[in-house]
Image 1: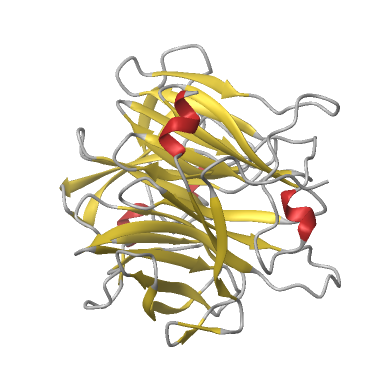
Image 2: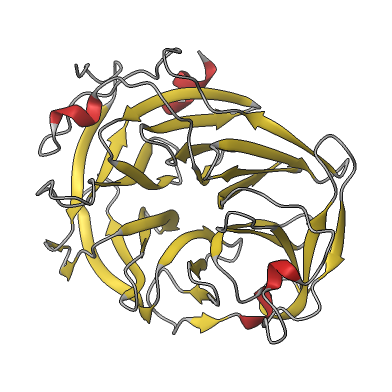
Amino acid sequence: MSRGLPPGFIGRIVASSGERAGGVVWHAAPDGGGCFPDGDGWIYVSNCALPLLGGVTALRFAPDGSLRSGYRVLSGADRNGAGAATPWDTWLSGERTPHGTVFECDPYGLRAPMPRLAMGLFTHGGMVCDPGRGFVYLTEQEPDGCLYRFRPDDWGDLTTGVLDVMTGAPGEAVEWEPVPSPAASRAPVRDQVKEARRFAGGGACHYHDGVLRFVGEDDGRIWAYDARSERLHVLHAPSTPGGPAAPGLAEIPGVPAHLGALGTGNAPGALGTPTQPRGGSTTAGGGDDEEVVLVAEGRVVPFLRMPDGWTVTGPSMSPAGDRLYFSCRPPAEGSGAVPVTVEITGPFEDLVRA
C-alpha cells in the first residue's frame, strides 16, 4: 500500500535507538525535536521521553547533510516530551510529569542546562516563544489541561517572571489570569484559577505572525489563538473514517514498508516547530493513524499518514527549510522494531504552495 515519495523528495534514517549516531548512543523514546543553525551546517536536538532517564541528545550536520557528531545536552531528567527553540538559540525541554520542570538547554553543548522553575511545575506538553511580545506559551498534557503564558521579567532571561493561564471560551475574547503558585506548592497549577479554559491533552505548539497554534492530543483538534484580537478558535478538526487520506510516503530504506501506507482515521496530535524562515510548521501524532501535515499561511496540507500504531514525534525543519526531521516510534506491544529518527529532503515550499 505504500507509494513513492513526491517528486524531488528523498528519505533516510539518521539515527536508530540503541545504536551509535555520530559517537553517541541514540536514545530510546525520542520525542520533541528542533533544528538550530550551526555555522555552515545545522543541529537537530531530540528529547528523550523515558521515565527518570530522560534528557536531550543533539545531532550535528555538515552542509551536505552528513552527520558530524552526536552528544548529550541534558541527562537525568524525567519523561522529556515536547520542546521549543528560543530566539537566542537555546532549547526548552519540558518534563511530562505532574510536577515537571522546564529545562533551558544549550544545543551546542557548551553550557550546562538550567531549570526554569518560574515557568511552572506541571505536565508539560509543549512551548513556543512570542518574541514580539516577549512571552513563552506553554500547553499542559492533561485531559483537563490549560494553556499558559510566561512573561519573563527580562526577555532573554527565563529565570524569573509571571505565569498566566488562559480563561474564556472559543469564539470569544479570552483573558489571562496570573497563577498564584507556579511551583504548585498549594495545589496543581491548573486548579489554581477557577475560570481557566480547559483543553484535551495539550500538545506541542507553534507561533507565527501573531497566531499561536496548538493541539489537543486527546481529541486531535488544532487550536488557533490570535494574540492580536485575543480570540480562540478551532483551526483543524479530526478527520473521519473513510475521509480523504493524506498522501503516503514511500518506504525509507530500513523503515518498514507500512510506514508509507495510506490510512484514514484521527487527525494530528502534536504540533512541531516552525519551518524556517517561511513561518510554516509541521504537525504530527495523536490518533490511531498518525498524520503529519504542513501548516503554512493559514493552510493545512496533509503530508504523511502512519497506521498500525506507529507514532510520529519531533518534526522540525532545517534552517534552510528543505529538510524535515522527525522520529518514528513503533507500537509498544511486541513489534520487535526500534524507534528511528529520519530525514526527508525535498521542495517543501513548493508543496505547501501547490
